Length: 405
Image 1: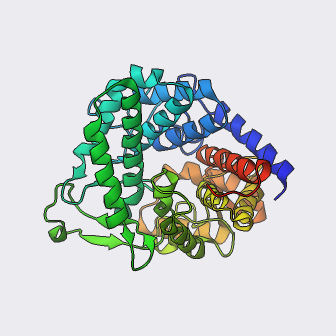
Image 2: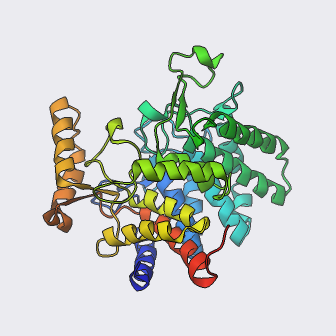
């Protein structure tokens, strides 16, 4: 990997984050005039984590204050909102948004003090209450309709990313509450129940890997086995890395190592390189099936933390190679795959008019003439993931040499 270019990409990623923060504090998912000119709570919270890692303290403060103020009266965070914090959601429950928002606030508080947590403590409490309201007391897992891929067909039920994010978010709320002298003992007990259920019910000892989800129609279904949706989704999905991503397990835990080994073998794109988010057969491949830089950065961090220098170089090197003018798309595809997706969605009658913004952007991108479909350029989220991966690489390989975390 070209370290000089990697450093330039790191600096550019910081500038991209700063440039795409509205004066009100919200981070756009993609710039105005592109596919996602809104503040998506999931993207916004992870970009806040990247800003924190880059030392953008004031930007992080404004981001947290913005998103906490955008919380609904029910305690739920919306799927997305406009720059004034008004709910513009068009999809149903995505409870991981509660988890990642709390997680980002907790990480800020550890580094820079608890003043925001104290000021917005009611919001914190309401967010935790909303999560626990959606916990099934038979299995002690959190129920959702959508999660990281916003794809109910594979996420409706007890999904691993949503549960890991929510568990980690509650644990951060517990730490904030303890620091502020709040009574958070029940939250700690509930979080531990969820964590143990993730490790028991969303992990397959036979396959030695985490699984994507347990399909369950209703959060209160009892007994679960008689729910009409009841089934297990065990195909590889990059979301299965979530227990380590959110710090519930160490990267060197064998359950994490074996899970990532499976993801690497199954989802590394043989034609383009980089990590796909899930199997092509799931067939929700907006813009064409292909690898995603932010998920590739996530798994790069795993290889960095277990000291696998060679695989970390492959992953970060790919991310560096596909950056265009030091910026990232949402994902990339080939022209053939892109055209296949357009044809299939159009002939099926499900090609929405609003996707034309994305389609026009793909065809207008300079990489189109080279045979590549760059889908939603730039997307802000992968710049945050690259910042976190680069900092890990710098600290564990460049400054201190290879070490285990």
